[in-house]
Amino acid sequence: MNGEELQSPVGQRLAGMMSNNGSRQKVIPIQEVRPYFGQWFEYVASLPDREAIVKVPF
Image 1 (tube, helix red, strand yellow):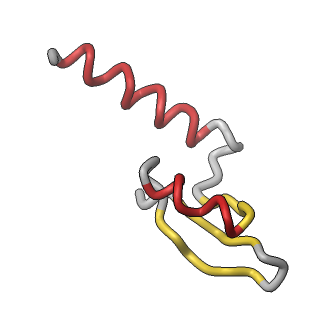
Image 2 (image 1 turned 90 degrees about the horizontal axis):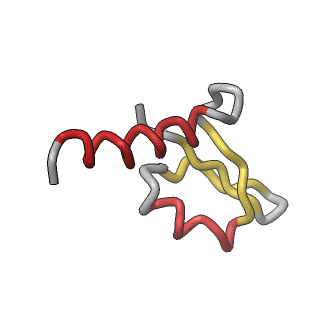
Image 3 (image 1 turned 90 degrees about the vertical axis):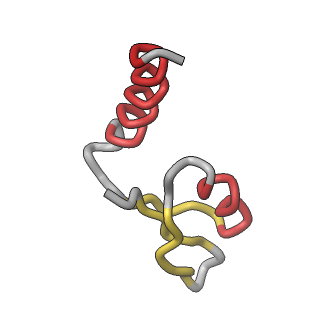
């Protein structure tokens, strides 16, 4: 994989994360937390209404 092929998916992923008004955190249903770990998100906390906060680590 050359540099251009590597940069394209990384750039697309970063653009997608930052498209939420530059927010680094996201509130999601608790049952949807696991797939976010493969997308560079970190678990932050659980909320009482069965939701969770995840964040981009950088």
